[in-house]
Image (tube, rainbow, N blue to C red; front, side, top):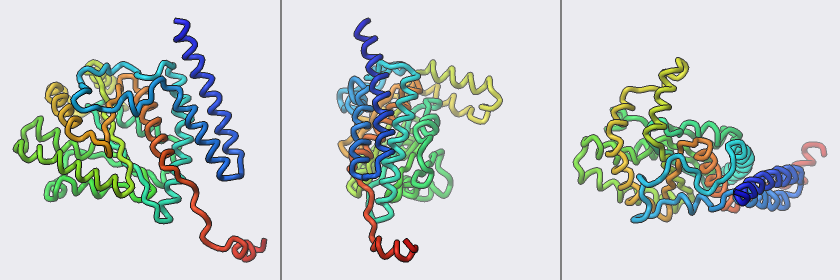
Amino acid sequence: MAKNGEAKQNIAKKLKKVEKKLALANSMTDVAQRLTTAAKASEILSSVFTEPPAQRLLFRPNETELRTIDPGSTPGFTGTKKECQQFIDLSAMEIERYQQMMYANGTRGGMRRVLIILQGMDASGKGGIVKHVFSQVNPMGVHYHGFGAPTALEKSHNYLWRIRKELPNPGWIAIFDRSQYEDIVMPRVYGTLPEKQWRARYKEINEFEYKLAQSGCAILKFYLVSSKEAQRQRFLSRLDDPRKYWKFDPSDLDARERWDDYMDAWQDVFEQTSTSWAPWYLIPSDQRWYSRMVVSELLHNTMKNFNLTWPTLDVDRKDILARLGE
């Protein structure tokens, strides 16, 4: 019990230290020093986890079982919900910093960009992640798209056609609420395509994501692991609040009744498509604050590891200052 208390106290101290380092970084005029100080703050921030989410929540083929994951757990984090929110606020500042830098490099020919794929059963918290993790990010440079059932136009093309249209431009972050994986799971669960056809998509998607990663795009694939009971409670809350009626769709109950079929389908997706260039992370999401925290951590670390700096001025500064009368 004492150790647990010490760990929680340690988290509070680390978060306070991060606040001070980020404030110091923002006060610096030297770009190199500012980036170095911010990177140190980022390292301290990540250390609040007892085990990095990139390792703890990574899907491992032939080892990780979706059904054995406790949706209510918070692996690697022993802190409170309040501390988690503080973490997200600090991490959002880091995400904003790295996103602006990535965007700036994109305007100068840099190819770094990020694709985030959010998957999970209905009411697993995908929308909340977008709202909270990207609260401080400049809308310029972030693209969100939710994929529903394909339209008649989309059906007339290859299933990846609509995916390609929404991919991030250089310097941008794209967030997919559902994705190309629906074009495997749905036909499998509902039998709308021959098995040979939807199974062929595993290889096609792996090749598609490999080429994307090779071109400079980091791909983060998150599956939010929720429980049937948590989903039930969230459906009920939607029916109890007139402001949330619009969120409820009777088809959500059809998917709920096929829960086990979905779990089988997703397990197979993870086994076949969790690759070194586009791995899957399975995140417990009954505690929504935890899933938001993990996504924030993995995103800000991904962009930090790009090791970008600000583009240099490509004109004669003295000449420009002279023209401005300085």
